[in-house]
Length: 432
Image 1 (cartoon, helix red, strand yellow):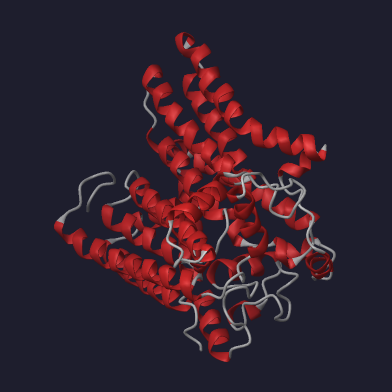
Image 2: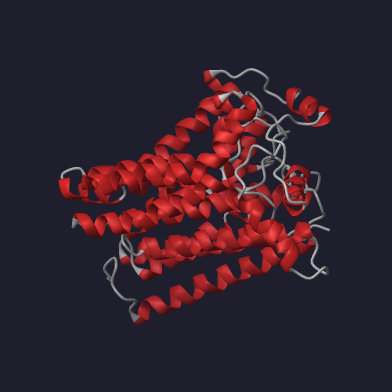
């Protein structure tokens, strides 16, 4: 058996090539989706486009608008594409391709990072399932800043899997990591959690090194604050509300009325324990019991399209295919949870994965708080957790590594088959 971190053996090549072919098919699907998916049907499409247009005109959008509270990184890159790309490529298509580039960048980081805990073959198979899971497929087929935040967050957290021991080397290593974490915070406000986690884990590594203490404060605290302050101070000055960092935008009357009318309307503890069977037959919010179920909506928005924003929920073939995919998604989900438990129970793995564990816990806790405070089905989106995608990938890789040769081979085949099927499911328009 190939050890984690070791070079690929010849028998790994077949798995790596197979996973590469699946990822390549997924990439082709995303390019197709960028052009084929109808304009301005993406999540919050109009506000995202208006942000870019404001930057093209030479000014920042009003912070109180629906997208104006977001940090500017993704939109600034979109505005640059506006000037650089030929007119034959519509702007909504360019912004979707930008989302796809960030998403596949995150997949590449995952593949490389997993080789600290898994064989090259296992790392490739897990990267393929990450690339093709419907939550990633849909996010990388739409305009939006989720995948930009996911890329920088994943890149920063991945670097903590192999931090140098020597203090000066660790501080140099931490400088690049902090810059990547800051990129996440400049892409989406949830990236601020990454900045905090990175500061904590490097501070812990350096806390006994007196000779680097001053530089550590400059790198871990002053540098990220200086980079993110212009956006967040402007936001606070405009709104006077610290919660505006998360969301200060005022939706249009139509959108606001639609959101206010969304079920369940009130949140109860039972909503966190329910898992309707409809997840496997009609994994969309309008199905019986779905809108009130946090686990059901979370699973359906990971392995299907719970919000019906991309897949055509009114189509019977889509209902069957999406429900089947949600059923298949139980396997990688269960494996990832099994691996997560193994990480927590193994001191060496727990120490190696400290930053992804801490970040995942913080982000998931914030997600649960949001679902309680905003009792609407639109508040339950797996894409909100994309910046923590390294943690389930680590869990899945560790679970694979714990299997015997035959079981591991069978699981690799199953995971690649699920990934390929999910890539087909999220090819926009196959149902037409």
